[in-house]
Length: 195
Image (cartoon, rainbow, N blue to C red):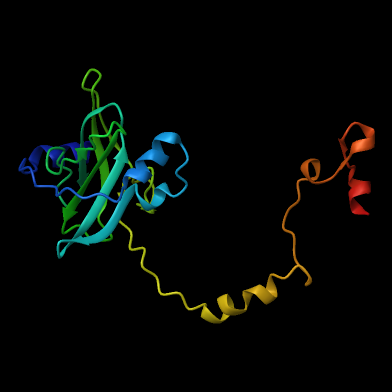
């Protein structure tokens, strides 16, 4: 941490333009506010992409009580003023932006300045797909592109997942699997379960 603070002090304080970009639709925001968005990993975090022909990374984080959020990392000398994100104007508390020239492998954190007492903190990305190895704690931009080579298995999996073929059960929670309704809905004993 002390090393990061020293690097920050020496870093150039130039503020870079973070392009507006968003992976969120109005429907995503509706579901998010409602608490029913089940694919937030596709929206939050860091996502390598191309915007207007320029490669870079899109960042999004939920920080509803933040006054300012910036992306800091090895690409800007951990400079807390260099790459500010923009808060959405829809009251969602989501901060986002597209930063050019950041590629997979770059390590980063979010520098958050709170509206309350201007408290400042550097936080890892709760939606990161990759992290530095301990004891380091930064998130890492990950390359999520993968060429699957399981076309044959996918084409034939219906045959292997049939209910009429043997299967392996890894674990069973006895108390929630079978009960004896006639006896106060008690769970089966181990000897009863063996049968």
